[in-house]
Length: 108
Image (tube, rainbow, N blue to C red; front, side):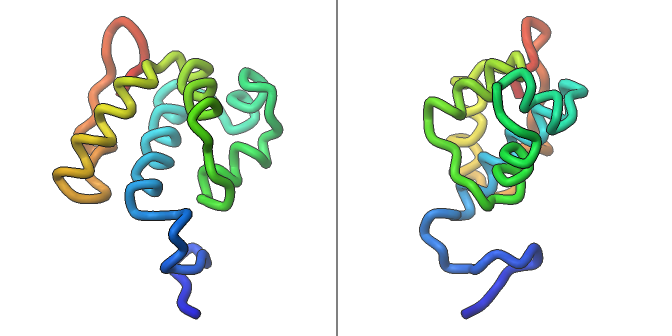
């Protein structure tokens, strides 16, 4: 069995490169909003450890939870998905660098 740089097993079909980009988008949005993991958890009704597990890719985010997290961050969930889809065509890992906030909300 092989492990990546953060100690997660590689080859796990639940945690793909595209999923890593999705988590990076959520973490970047949280950081840009100025919220801590605790602050996001309070807004979203989750514990800070729950948010931490998502950001460390130890817990999957389902679609409804993704939307609730995006809304708690005052981001447009569709804009995040568009960024993810654009990134999948360009290659993994580049979406957070390209992301620019919208003046109407904190979409990236």
